[in-house]
Image 1 (cartoon, rainbow, N blue to C red):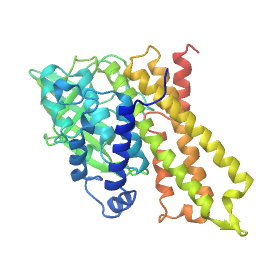
Image 2 (spheres, helix red, strand yellow):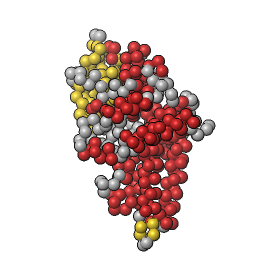
Image 3 (cartoon, one colour):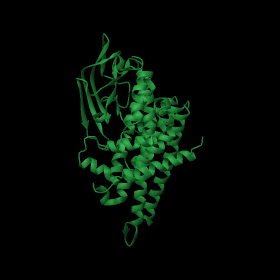
Image 4 (tube, rainbow, N blue to C red):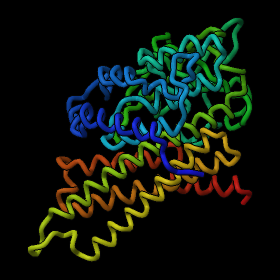
Length: 380
């Protein structure tokens, strides 16, 4: 397996790096937070990303996309991660659009995916429930069939960018008990439908999210996405794909935090010399470098496994997320410690990287969860 980008992929990565450096400096994060921006991201910048085709990278050409792969989207997400760009690639493309792509019928795909690709429609996947512990199969929300419609009730938490979404893709149980693998269905819901209450959540890692409450929400039968009761395996596939994208974003943020820390080690003077000359700090920096290179390898490997539909795809995803979680946390925390007192202040950007690392670590399963999953997939 080659873990080297092609020339086209390198060009895409470089163009993404140039765009993000110019349009999305890390200072935006502080401005959006302190200004209490209602969206938590820039819709104008989202439109510019659409002009570059980023939202359509994974969407097939027949639905208005570019029909490319996960190595290509990883090139973009890594550069977004370097500057912690908050635009909803994860929520609208990797979660929402993938749910439609994997579960929807042709009418639904034709109605929704071209609008995602051109940036005019924001999707959010409302699947997570409190106490689920990363399982997509713990679904207490219900969907009761009534004549030609469904009535939805329940609550979803940590719906990424749910407060800004034009459509919600909601998982609800049409049959079975709360943890059964069968009986889960997906529905496309307009957040303006009577009975839908969306409340924005403030997260530690500055990724916008929302709580979605459903109270006797009536939707038509055409809102059902895919086969009734068969959405569980689809959700697993969607989360795996989103996990790989998140790992690529984490790689960018981790690399940026490392570079920021090394630069500080070169410039901060103590006892008349740069602190980077101290052997103890050299060793710790070298250890971080090694971990990041290993992280890069497993993330690229997971992208290739997705693009090639490899038989060990789920193992590759869990290996990537476990390594990414551990490395991002290590580099974030080491960065704060090596920066000393200034690293603990809100004025310095290194803290943003540590917070994003910690939040991303816990998204879609932390290292312990994915090591356990990897072992189970291997038969242990």
